[in-house]
Amino acid sequence: MFEVLGRTEGKVTAFRMLKPDDWHQHMRDGDMLKLVGPMVSKRFYSAIIMPNLTPPITTAQQAFEYRQRILDATEPGFIPLMTLYLTDGLDPEEVRKSHNAVWAIKYYPRGLTTNSDSGVKNPADLWTPGTKPYDCLQVLAEQRGVLLLHAADGFDRAGAELDPYDQEKHFVMHTLPEIIKAHPRLKISVEHLSTKWGADFIVTHGGEYLGCSLTAHHLLLDRRDVFRGGFHPHRSWMPVIQPPEHKEALRHLATADKPFVWLGSDSAPHPRVKKEAACCASGVLMAHAGIELYAEAFEDMKALDNRFERFASLNGRKFFGFINDHMQTIELVREEWKPQPLFYAESGENLDVSELVPFRLGENIRWKLAA
Image (cartoon, rainbow, N blue to C red; front, side):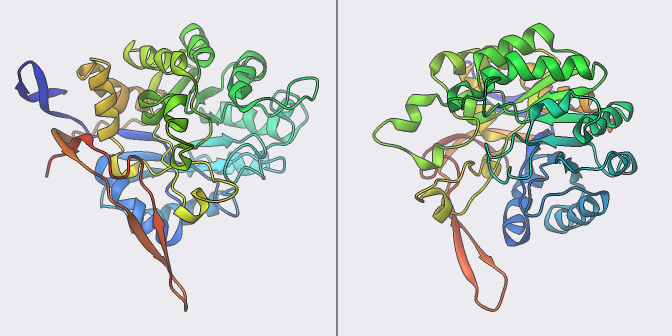
């Protein structure tokens, strides 16, 4: 389906592709959802919706009600794919009866990212029989659902706190193999892969039961971009951006045309006041340019071709079992534009107008959705 519509001096200037899916999307709730929802549905046919609201989504009924709020805030035809939040108390029977309402369960390491305080306290519970998290994953495997992993460990096996730059490395070397061994028929998506160690593991072990998503910001930036000229809070998210060699490993993985690698934007908006604060919130709004930034990255990687469409529109769909062979398309043109500040008003008697800072605020973005 990928079709070049324009070319100038050997460079692609316009193309058409199947409307993609986003396999990692934070749409938030309330008035922020009303702002973000149209951005997402304009660019994506469907999206896996993260469950880390406050309180977290832990029942089929909560997922159903949240899904309706998303449908009310998005363009007609958009399909939200719902998830449950894996907690120490999540009931395996809730997972079983949620089969027709949710597509995946999300694991958060407790305390390591936004709204993760309800996450599993002891990662070993994921592979230890007799614990509720273990039993939930057994049911999930039976139902051909997907375990979404925030692949980070806060502590090593001796109990020593890990450096944030080593959290993913420790997870893929120690925790992920244990999960795979305990649940060999469980589909696992390692989300927002950020390191060369993670890339090496996926290349070696990826397949029918294991894959990963990649974000545009990890493909476009490396650690130097966070600190160049001072610390940039709007380039602060988890997992942290690594040194250049890790970005290069991720770019190689993205363009290697592996069927177990797909798009997951990890768009995670926060109000400016929470980003520019004494304790900076992790995450950034990507939804305003959710496919355009990937096009920029793939152009930089000289892979703006069928490989891009498979990464964005086909691979994740097949892995998750989302059998819906739509023929909707989007068109992108090579036309520079600058994101502007965004505002939303929280409902209530006293309206509180909050500002969101989108990724690359005031900077040029090279690709644009065709009108």
